[in-house]
Every structure is written in C-alpha cells, then in structure tokens.
Length: 638
Image (cartoon, rainbow, N blue to C red; front, side, top):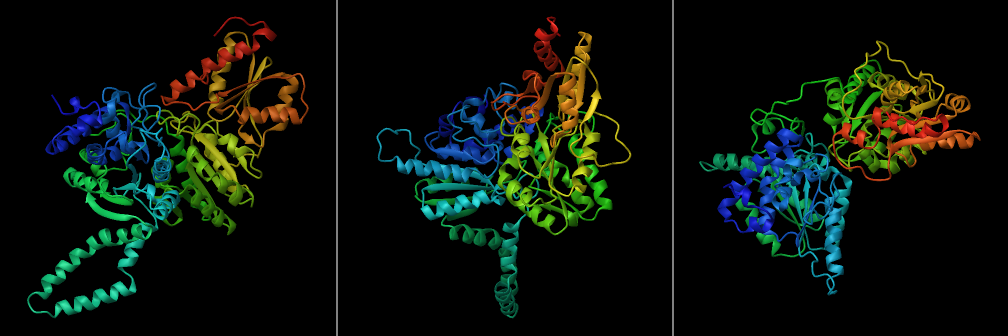
C-alpha cells in the first residue's frame, strides 16, 4: 500500500517518520501528473511546490495554523493532503474540485486564491485578527501561526510589497514563504532581479572587488585558490546577502535561500521559525515542473495544459481551428509591420495573450511589466500621451484590477490606448475567478471609451485596426478558445464606429447579440424557423456606442427584441439597449435579456456552462419561444 493511500488529513502526514516524506512527495507528484493528464490544468507550478507542501503540513498544525496560498495551483498537493485525495480526479471538472483555493471547499482553504499577490495582505489580516481577538474567550479556534506562500512571480505585483511594508512596520507574528522558481508563468521580468545585479556591479562593490582580486593574485601559493573561491562565492552572495538586506530593510527577518526540494532542510527550518515570533520571510528555491522531465525542460509550455500522455507529455488533443488569441497575435504583428508607432504590453501573460509571438517579431516594441496590471495601464497612457499607439493585452478578469487607471489615466485624458480583453465571457475550467463576466458593465459607462466585441475571428482583425486608428481609447473583448473557423478577409479595414450589422432579417422577433453570442443567435434563428418563427439576427458589434438607427428601427418594426450576451445581465449589453429605448422614449416594445445571472459561475467546460445558462442555440431558442408564446400563440417547445 502506498503512503499516499494512507493520508486522509494532515494529521496522517505528521504521523510519518521524517525519512518517509520524500516518498510521499514522489507519490504526490505521480498523482498530480496522472490526474492532469486526463483533466488538464496547471502542471509545472504544482509539481515544483510538492516538497514545500509536504514540509509545511508536517510542521504546522493545520487548520489551526493558517496557510494562505497565493494563486491556488501552488496548492494541488495541499488539496490531496487535506482530505480531497479521492476527489482529486474531479479537479476543474463541473461539480468537482476547483483548480484554485476556495473557502467553501475545505476548512484548510482559509482564503480564496485566483488572482496573484493577495496572500500576504490576507495573511496579515488574519494574523492581526488573531492578535485583536486574543483577549476574547469566544475564539478558541483562532490561528496560532499564519503562513503566506507566495511565488516570486507574484512578488512583481505592487500589492505584495505594500503588504510586506505594512507587516514589517506592525512587527506582526507572520511567516511569509517566498517560493522562488525564477518564473511566474513565463520568465520573470522587472527591477527586483536587476537590482541584485546592479548592486553587485556598483562602483563601490566593483572597486573593492578589483582591489581584493589584485591583492589575492600577488599572494604566493594560496592567493589564486582563494581568488577562485571568492569568484564562486560571488553568485552565492547575490542570492544570500542582497535579498536578505532587501527584506530586512522592510522589517522582516530573512532566512534562506533554502533548497525547496530538500524536505529535511525545509522541515528543520520551519520547526525553528515556528518557535520564534515576529515577521519572518523564508526564501525557498524550487524548480518548476520538478519530477516530470518534459515539464522541467519546458515549464512555460507545461504551466497550463490540456489532456496529455503522462509518459511523454505529448498533448492528446489535435489542433483545431485557430484560436481568437492566435488570430489577435498574428493580426497585431501584421499591422505593426507597417506602423512603427504600435507597441504591445502584457502583465506577465505573454503566452496566454499570444504576445510572445509579437515579442519575437518586435522585441524592442514589446513590454512585459510583470504581474502589475495597474502599472501596465498607466504606462500605456504615458506612451500614448507622447504619440505611441499601445495595445494592452490583458485577460478580462485581470483588467478589473486596473479599473481606476482605465478611468482616470486613460479615459479621462482621452488617450488612444487599445485594450484587448482576452478570455471574455465564460472561460471554462478555471471558474469563478477567471470568467470575464463583468467587462461590459465596468467599461461601458466610462466616458470616451469605445467598447467592441467581434462575432468571429475575422471581425476581430478589423476591430483591432479600428482601435488602432481611433483617436481615443478603445476596448475589444473576445472569448477563450477556438474561433468560428471562418475565412479571413485579405484586407483589414476599420469598422465605422457604432455601426452594427444585420445578419438576417425577420418579422416576428429580433435577436440582438454581441460577440461570441452572434453565431449562437444565428443557429437559434434556424431552430426557430423550423417552428415557423421569423427571427431577425443582429450583430451589434459595439456595446458602446450602440447603433441607434439599427436598434430603434427594429424596435419600430419588429416590436419584440431579445438581447443575448455571455455577460452578467446587470449593467451589461442588454441593459444598454434598454437604456437606449428609454432615452429615445420608445413605447410598446417587448424586450427580453438573455445572459448570466447575478451569481459567480462555477467551473466547468465552456460548452457545458453555456448550455446550463441557456446560452447555447437550443437554450436561446427555447427561451425565445417562451417569450413569444402569448403574443404569437406559440406552444410547441424546440
């Protein structure tokens, strides 16, 4: 019987002998690899953090001691060790385990984690709550130790340093574990690593170094060996002395760096730190993809995977139609070839947004700012203020983090920044933290901003040029996954601002759809036609400004309007249409809005979620028939 089969809680981990822990870690890696080979998900990151997970649960008394994980995929092993081993095969599947941390899922998941750089702030809040409530007898389960685990990629986010600064000033009893694998999703960028190198190459350091080398060279016999030892120590000093100084200046006691795959070293360190009080930062160095050779060799490719062969790492899924992401990247490169003023910006997601290809084509016109969406937007505003045309490619859900900058730094100044919001709508297995369900609502009310959504990948190409020639800010929102497989026009042309498109005409009802819902509406219209219903289909194209002439004309003639969007109904596209009708004093028109409910949507396959919320062709047709039942005396379901 394997060790892992005997683990139903962290108490079982703590009953093991120390020399059994490496075997447990190896079995955890096998479980993660074979599960993700079927379900897909994040792979390289979880494998690198396995030993760290084991050591933490071996030393600390969870859940009484609190673990706060930054971005939940560090904690796949944590899920297995905390009573979810038998359900781990359901990871990221509908009604199965979340790919991230969720308080509702387990008492061991003390804080939800989907976006990066939140762990230290949340952990500091928990630690301060413990201290605030220490004098009360009503909190017997208050945490004793609070541990935040944050990756070095997340340390590029300003929020992490804000929390470190606050914790150091408060002198709170808090442990921060820096899981340093030198990567976030892609290779890390930014000033932190550059700062270490600048310090080593600074004038004072260089002068001392040169004088010391000169002295050692002239010492007979022992001088040259000492010089060689000094050179070998130089890189060690970069990793040991300088980060320690940086964090200790912020009020933390620094420990490390420690080999994150030596469980005995990790256990001994955590045992020592647990007995002490105050803010500590434990620097742990790990290798992304540890234990799975394909992932170790290419951790970027294995950051997030679809189903694969666990023996070779080869994807099982055959390539299909080009994705929206791929078409966006190819089009941007094509446009930038003739327009030297175009630059591209991402926030630590070059592969996810497709901008890794732009970076290869135009390395001097590409910026990865790290996990720093706020900076990305204001940085783009500064570029635009001087005549550059920046394209900011960020997932819809991540742009939420830079809302203030979109409003005040870009739109208030009417600067020509083009926002490309990948992963709009229902994204699938990543779930509630990653669905792009709120972007229409948080963007369309901002003055000066034009908001677009393409019906297919060909229209995305035209919208990208539209944004790049428009004299003010624009946003283009498109879905995750494959496009519609349509032919692409040989010439890219800008679209007239605020003009929709009549796909087909009809007399009984008008289906006014936006973005990825336009093909759904067209297929729903085919189903309605089989029931004798004549449905017009409109591709709105623009959430803002709306095509007043087209929509008001439909309201005048058809009198029954159904809006369709893969977005929250509250404040979304349908609400914009209702506002237009109210503003124009349109009377006698029946309107139904189809979209997402006032709830966070759980994880599941994209097609399944659309079907569940009535946003597939059959669901739309059924709901339209129900809408028309009384006015047209329709009773037969689809």
